[in-house]
Length: 140
Length: 161
Image 1 (tube, rainbow over the protein chains, first blue to last red):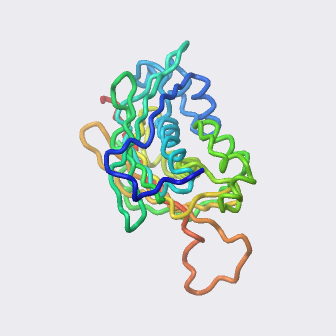
Image 2 (image 1 turned 180 degrees about the horizontal axis):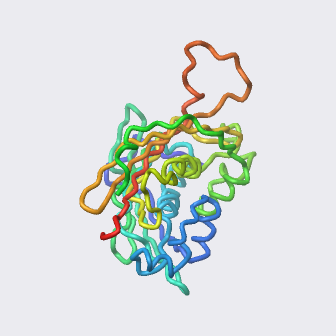
């Protein structure tokens, strides 16, 4: 995979866009892989008792999935040296059905001397933002 | 209400977490990470890594295991059924790879309660333990090579929130 050339980038450039979906099976798979077995991610009863409308996705599943747009652009998973977000709105996952997450990565800042690019991720469900200040620092 | 007495607490380095190839593949699949360096040893080595590379958020597996020392302590007064994740940050000093033996030092950095909500910030410092037993030098006060820092904030709603 070829890596992007920092000299050709400008703040505001879109580095990638994609649509991903989560169904209940995806939540169970993430629960097993991550060890996060909090029942609000698989039991509607427990989710409602916790004041939620129903089962929600792990915030870490959303965070872990949307960064793929950055990794695939950078061409190297080890290039992501810092990655942060706030979880601003829960992602409800219906059954039957799925949640649809739209991701857009944009160059937010460039540091040619350090060789780093900050990619800002806009992450929405039905037009509403679900992650806040989602930023990945990439060393090219 | 989270017990404010825990603020500033630092836990001793915990038992090492062994990063396995199949765990990296399983986690990568769960987050839809298809880059070959997570799945294919030849591809990972071809990219200059000693083994399969963990995805950027894999360290959460190691960190949450360590955070449990604090979260599950009854004295900490954290009702896990009333917890939501507020924010998360990963800083990688070097990529995590299969074969790493990671020990974590857990810090409880901040506990702030406002009204019926407590915000609790923890910081996990992950270190790769040396592969061979070495004679410790007098200045070696670090558990190993510093690999990653994971900062996490939980919001805990009180009974009446």
